[in-house]
Length: 139
Image (cartoon, rainbow, N blue to C red; front, top):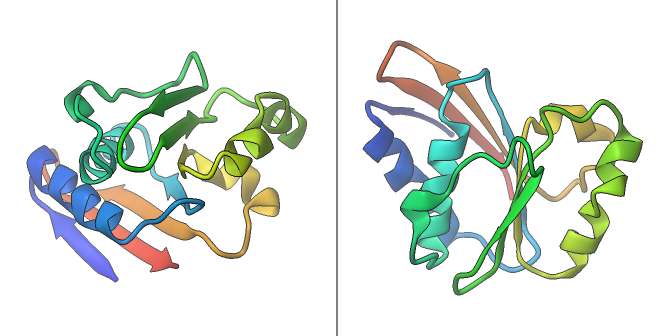
């Protein structure tokens, strides 16, 4: 499925719709250039999962993972700064999978070899300053 959003609010609404279809244990793999809207989409997913302060969701670029409480826990990874699969394993990726929340991974292309076959793959592309083309595949 390919969707075009025309604003950050549209991207948040799309994330909220996606979240309604997610369940505990699901993995969402995000890809896209800097500024493509990955974190904005995660805000919508957080909203859809019942995270009260979803507007405060921000990229965990420096802390690598943030945890949010909602109807289902949300574990938000940003692995942009990691260089190899060992570093991904070292931050406890598999431990988070075992915790049965929804795992969302920004820059997931760095770990395609260890992603489970069953995951949602979302690619975001910048069309212009407001519009994003978003491809959703899987689950």
